[in-house]
Length: 340
Ligand code: PEP
Ligand code: MN
Image (cartoon, rainbow, N blue to C red):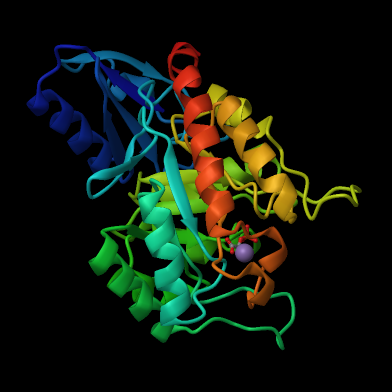
């Protein structure tokens, strides 16, 4: 059930509706918008009787939700979500650039990359301290030491820190040192972790699982939102197919597909999406052209020595050039995406 308030509904009328929802034992999710507030209802097992709300003051209509999701949808919030991280945003008119190494390897490496990407316009710095590696013998990340380096990067360059949490305890640590929690592709189906991220005060970057359908990915976002955290960014990072010329197949069609259903911002990761250095910039350009709200790109000062994902990491110079390219494309895109 979705209760849509009239444009001139008062704050009191909205809170009265919330009171009725809570008295029924359900959870209310008010989404204030430019033209009206809508209130999503979760926690109900069967259908909610619309007559609870229909005649209350300020209510325009009570709509039964027939889709599998309740909170990610444009029905609830026709205004697109802008995720705010301090003074940086993802989902507004500005193209969000999230750049940095796959893993934080050392103070020197992190600072060399951070200096370069902040000069080239990134507002967000990424880097894993806890790495989900296929092999238990591969570099697993520096852990807390890596988070401390990230916090120093934030201090020195003013970049917002995006870093992955592998488990619930990892979220506690990320909350201490960073600005945004990354939930990786491998954990997109980890429902207790998603719920924990939903109880965080930090925004969440939710990567698509490599075999996840659009619905599964959006329902993973729903898991976060149902706990009350509405600051979610979706990240398309490629899915596994029969293709052998790339590490994953970057599903660019996911961008317009998501935008047709959801108010959440969506960013493209052309690094994991291709696995190959020479493909990253072309796919980054394509991601922006298809309407993505931002890019997540791996950058390394010495990719040939990287402890993880060196083959897909841009050099500092390549990153600078990529940014020039995508900013040009984004300028052309802004009026078109706003119309769509
Ligand atoms: C990463 O961003 O370094 C990462 C591990 O990504 P994914 O979860 O998409 O594989
Ligand atoms: Mn990586």
